[in-house]
Length: 252
Length: 238
Image (cartoon, each protein chain N blue to C red):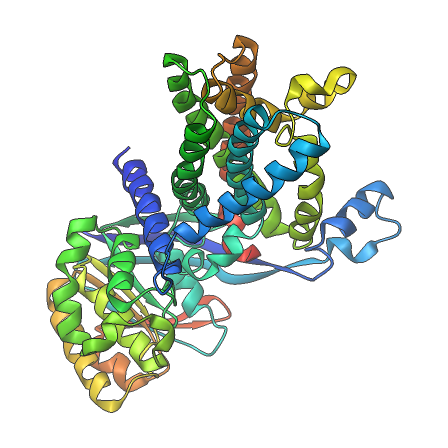
C-alpha cells in the first residue's frame, strides 16, 4: 500500500517537474499552452458558429469545454503508444512498476488541463451560463474521465511497446475520432445519427464534464456507463500488466 | 539483514525481428493462418542466465567477471528486479540501489539538481530524503555550477559522476554496479574508488560487474565468473 502511495506521489512530482522543465526557457511558460487553447477556441468558435448556424453565446462555451477535454484525452492517447519506449532507460535499469510511467503521462495531461481551465473560466465570464451547485459535478466527472484515461494509457502503452506500427495507426485514427466525438457539436444535435455518440466512449466523458459547466445535470445513465467502463478497463489493464508486465523491458 | 538468494534462476530474452514487432504482419498472419507471413513468429529466445543458484549475505562483496554477453548485466538486472526469471526463484531483502549504464534514467532537459532528486526518488527515497542527499552528491560529484544546468550539456564522465553519486548517497543496503569506471578521468576514478570503499563498509551487499580484474580484486571478497549464462567459477578471494 505504501509502495502504491510512493509511486503515485512520484508520478505526480515527475509530471510537475517535466512541466517546469519544458517551459523553463520561455517567457510565458506553461501559458503558451493556454494561449494555444485560447487561439483554438476563438478560431474554431468564430468559423464553426457561422458554419453550423448556431448562437455564439451557446456554441463557444460548449466548444471550449469540449476542446480542453479533447486535448487531454487525445494527448494521453497519442502519447500512450510510445510512453514506455520513451522511458526505456528507466524501465531497463531501475525496478519500476509500468503503471507509474503511464500514470505520469496522465498527470501531465491533468496539469495541462488545470492550466487550460483558465480559458474555460474566461469564456464563462464572457458568455455567462446559468450554473448553480450542479457545476460541482464537474469534479467527479473529471475524476472519472482521468481514471479512464489512465487504464487506456496503460493498455495502449503495452500494445504500442509490443507493436511498433501501432503508434502511426493511432495517430491516423485520432482526427476521425475528433469528428466522431461531440466536441464541435452536442450529442443531441446528431439526430438520427445519435448511435455514433452512444457507441463512442469519449462522448460519455465529454457529457459528464461539459453538462455541469453549462448548467445541466448529466443523465444517470451516462454515469453508469462511465463507471462500468472504468471497472472493465481497470480489470483489463490489471490483467494485461500481470500477464505481460515482466516482458516490457525486452520490448523497448 | 539484507540477502539475495537465487534458486535455479533462468532468464530468457525474447529477441524480436522487425516483422514480429509489426501489428499489421501479425494480423495478416492470424487472418491467413500464417500462410502468407511465415516469418511473423520469428521470435527467437536467448537464454541469458541458465539455472543460476546463488546465495549472497551480509558482508558479501561480489565481483562478476566474464566475457561480453556472458550474462553479467542480466544477472545484475535480475537481482535489481528489472528482469523476471522464467524459471526458478529470486528473493531479495534490503533496499537496492543501482548504477547501470551511463546516466540511465537521467532526464536531459532537467538540471543536475532536479535529476538528483528524481533519481533518488526512483531508487526509493521519499522527496525529503532525496533533497537531503543533494549536499552529499554536490560534494562528491564536484560538478559545481554545472548542477544548475541541464544534464544534456554534460559529458559522459560528468553523467557518471552524477549517477554514481546519487546511487551511493541514498544509503542502500545493496549496491549493484555495472562497469561504470570506464568514463571519468583518473582523478574521478580514484575518488569513486574511495567512495566505494566507504560505502562497502556501511552497506551489506555489493555486486560489481567489471572487466577490470584489478578492480575486482581490490573491492571484492568473492569472485564469480560467468560464461554463457552459467557460473563456471565461484570462489572466496580475500
